[in-house]
Length: 219
Image 1 (cartoon, rainbow, N blue to C red):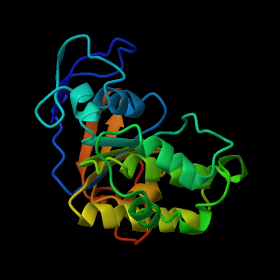
Image 2: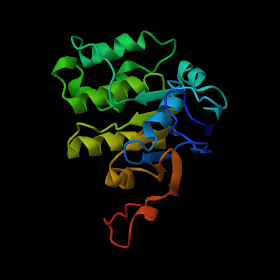
Image 3: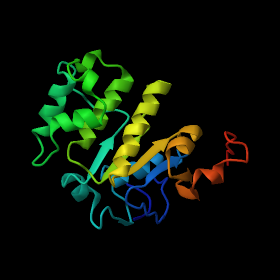
Image 4: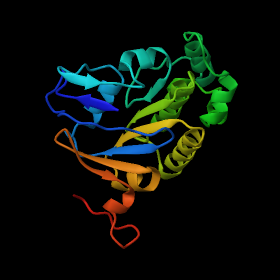
């Protein structure tokens, strides 16, 4: 549940109250400047609201992240290019007091075929999958994804979302930002349309589709 006013970095976000149930896959949809990344930054504790209140699991976002209850797959993030995928996971796992077995993470993130590949040899989509594996290490209750399938082809995107829904089936909550109407409709249980820092519409994909199966209404 979040309640916040404008952030220190931007005045885009207005007062909102948004609750995400456990095990839900929720999409944040909206154009550039709508407030998607600002919302995710606040949930991760990167940006502090200048007034109002924001809580994650009943406490501060930074505490939830520090406790390993929140994991994130962001659009960018430094990776050690000379390490292999498996070495990267083991290195980062060693920085956490508590983590899942690395072999289990490799399997759940679909990284088995990439485990021995050096990061610098990975495509953009493969690096995103590695970031997904890194986000799973602490077995978080909430996964935050910012444009997670950028750089992936259609097949890789479908595989990624299959893995993500498997995590949701385990009770993990997934919140992702996207520009793609179809991606939100295909993979989210609920879509929250943001406009100028406000929740414009919130509901299932049926609210955004006409009677025609693939005809999305842009509002």
